Length: 163
Image 1 (cartoon, rainbow, N blue to C red):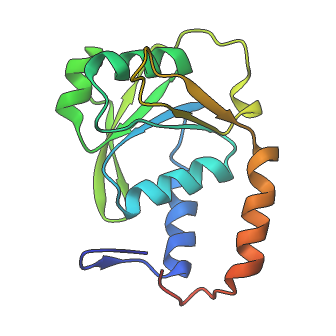
Image 2 (image 1 turned 60 degrees about the vertical axis):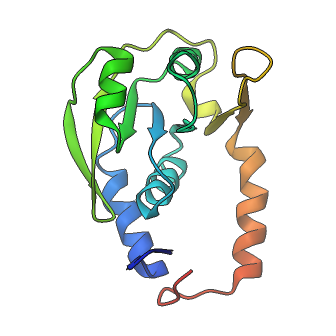
């Protein structure tokens, strides 16, 4: 996995995912950060832990972000944009989390109770909301697993390979 002069072999990616997974206390996580190796590590760690991951698009307006955070019932938000999140939710950074060489801010949120258990869903991806409030597309592990299996079978990679 490459970004500029930063890269991770598949073996390093697996190790980074395992390290981060141990630090993820919570059930519903929002990710508001640029496309980078740290994003992929977090996404894979949350998927492996069967915790809900909600990618939050950087282009969302403050109103769209507030809606997605509340609608998904997030209890944690990880970001490389702490000032923006602090202004958005009126909270301060709880702690810093080191992921793939990046220091990210972790915010604890007061989640709104949700009908569906977080374990039933592993990903909610929000639409742009151009015709109203963003709507979440909910994916369960059962929906994602066949794709993961097919990619693993087709990829024929080894731990030293770099994507």
